[in-house]
Image 1 (tube, rainbow, N blue to C red):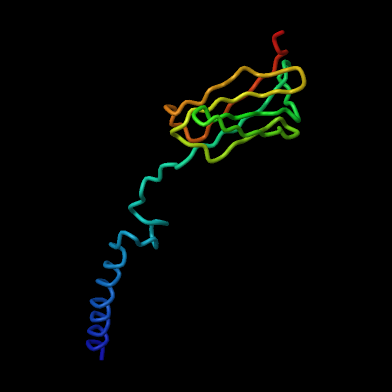
Image 2 (cartoon, rainbow, N blue to C red):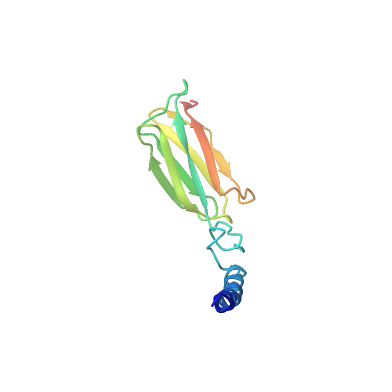
Length: 134
């Protein structure tokens, strides 16, 4: 009886161990490692621009007009800043140059450029307002 039990346990082990080994060698198995072993490097398809508009004392400006211009087509997008002075633009091309400027009442920021040669996917620009030159 004992010999038969030992033989049955051995046969089960022989049947189960290769199945487990086969499952863990699967490169798409996420049982033990939390995900596929071979992940493809995902490169971003577009850029994201965000920032804050501040006054000459460094405080955020609500209601400032931020204009982003596509320098190739001269298309313009405008954003009005939130209570905390923040703005953002999404889905910007990596192959286009952009120009960025902020305006509020009689103040404006310096013009900032975003180059197509800058491959940064998440860009942050602080736009400081100053009195417009006469």
